[in-house]
Image (cartoon, rainbow, N blue to C red; front, side):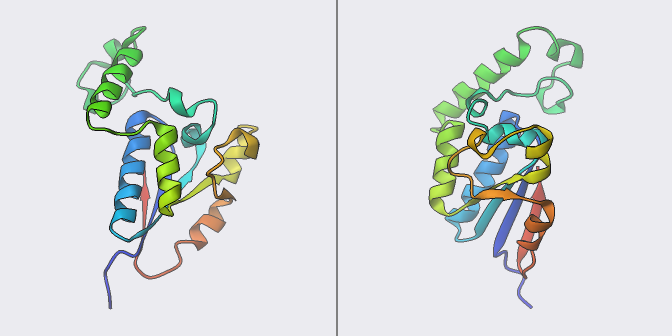
Length: 157
């Protein structure tokens, strides 16, 4: 019995910068290792593939223990913008592409990008609201059927 990972399926439910890039970097890393990868954008994760919102993602400063700042400070006006600007500057130093460009890179590498039908309907979105690189809008059942093979792993972000 082989335990080799052959396919990675990522579920992105929150479109904070740190969550979106975590999914993008891992999906890209899988492709670089010759592993199939797919990302399923659901609920607020859909913002990462909405044409009008994808370049305006923010760092979550409230309720994020990794920020090491008290919740009250994280909620102050301007804190999220400051943290987002700092994070983007650090990412630029590492030559991390902006969200839209990263999605193009993922698509070009063969990573499949899916929107959740329930969330698309719930937020009253149309296919035209979403990136052109999107491979389609799937039900969760359709997405799970894509995991029905040996060596497939699902990761919720």
